Image (cartoon, rainbow, N blue to C red; front, side, top):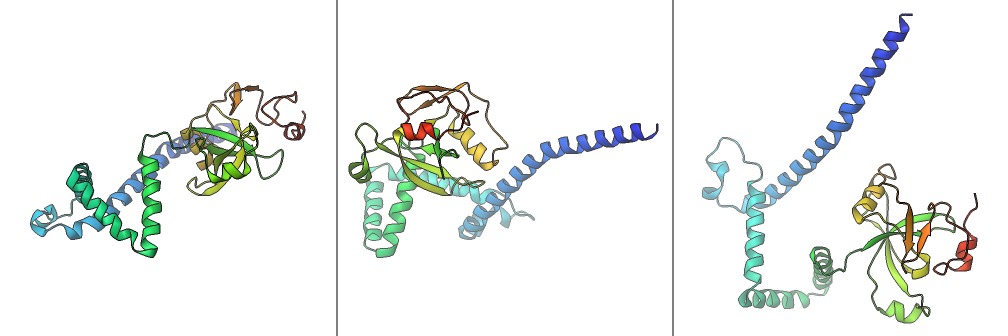
Length: 250
């Protein structure tokens, strides 16, 4: 008779601990990452700040984040100066100098293109989350679908009415690494989830999934009713017959 209250009390304590852990762990990890980032920026910027302008000279303790504030101000000032004619001329001269260095020009050009793509609002980023059958038929992998562009790859490999589209298949739990693949448009099943939801699904290894949607669409806009693991087996114009026949039956 005495074991039941004891077991119930231990269960409640365990549940309290798990609830507190769920609340505290994300906060602690976020604070640790933010603090580490601030310290990293300060370690780079503070040594170049003259002592008379640094608050660390006049205070008995270091001021965290001062280097980050200085870095943000400098970056904004450089952006302001680059926006005028003189600034653009200086940047152009510097880029021409880097363009004459065999190793540096490739690294600089690639990094500049990546940052311009990521920070621009030109619609060149991934626009939707999709599924492709990889690494074999019947096994589905989550991919981020890029916008359609005419490239040399399309000129050489496109099929009539079914072009190739670049997709990025991220790895779990680090979505910054993965594989670039060119997949036929008819072989991509688009999902309703956002890019952010897709990234959460990848990082959490499937533990944090977005709300289930009632249907999906392919790239040509045709709806597909049913679940991902068992889509309907009827004929569908957006799927080739060999792909549809490979789907499992319930």
